[in-house]
Image 1 (cartoon, rainbow, N blue to C red):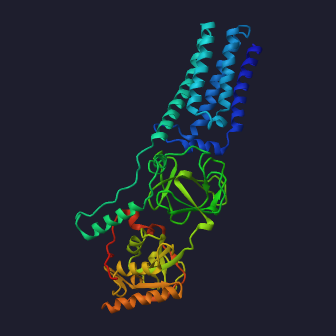
Image 2 (tube, helix red, strand yellow):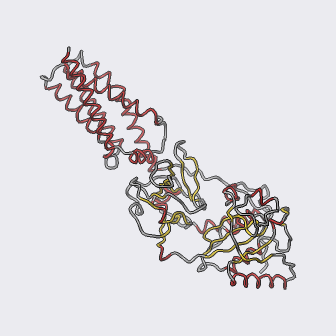
Length: 474
């Protein structure tokens, strides 16, 4: 009796020792990588179930091994069966470090084959006693079979990917209206600016696939510069925010403000990140890992990005325009050639760090203002200022269309004398054309960014400006 109990204890100890050995290879990052590679095509158990499930399954394996051993080690059949059990247990312990070289689906199928060989050998040798061992291993076989099917389907879906979930813009009822024509023209211009992608790039950027870990050109990459969207060239990340997370993909703990958008992933678990300008898939964002002081990790596919070295980065300039509701002003500037980024906010008042509600009272002195960051090698300040005068009515005083108030005044906040002189020249041209220009000129001071929901408002909501329209004046 004591010898039998001792055998059972040894079997339990060996099985759980193998489990512990596997745990030594299993880091938090490797688990993160595993989950990051899942597309959840059908059903995956919740996280809290994994611990108890593996404990029960190892217990069943331990008891099954005991039933084989307890019949007697003298039989060659029993030794052979135990040998298969040991091989399977070893593979089970090593599945984490083997994951990237031997796909989990293939490993699961191999485990099934080895287990069934062990069962059949013992069952044929001892038909009565060892049927119980086979029955006790059925739950484990079902679990491993499920893992093989799941990972096989994940592998298939990663290769064909899923359909893009980009929202479609709603159009007004009248397709012949000027606003709709302007919007369609801008859409066509935007589409022309999108870079042509290879099939591999489309699989990730458009159809939300995932490149193989450790394979991307920017994973082990430390040059200084800026990472841009491969589809639309928008700036996404700075090299100063990149860090080594050992996860297999480039990692950043911060992004260029307003450049990256977070949306719920289709798997219902993770959070996807996309380019805020073109909607291209970038990767996923993870928080709470304590990998950097910012406690955030943007996990990005290399294939979704281009890199602009620091020495080749253009010397960018800024311009500030106020012309009524900043939603409409930004709408017409975002897709202009040479414009790197836009941001809406407040300028020209006395209240520090104002809120939208405070500015709407008209007591802060601020105007709804748009900040434009542009590349002077691709466009000029004069071209941007001309566009500003052509997308709003510069003759209206303290209003723009239905929006009335000092915060809706027409104003140009210049950052240097050259911008001031250009603005004065354009105003003089308009006056010569008979326009009573009410646009104010003032030196730019502190720019206070508006709340996040105001940024790229029309792009986010799929609507068109209600108080701005293009009118050629130059």
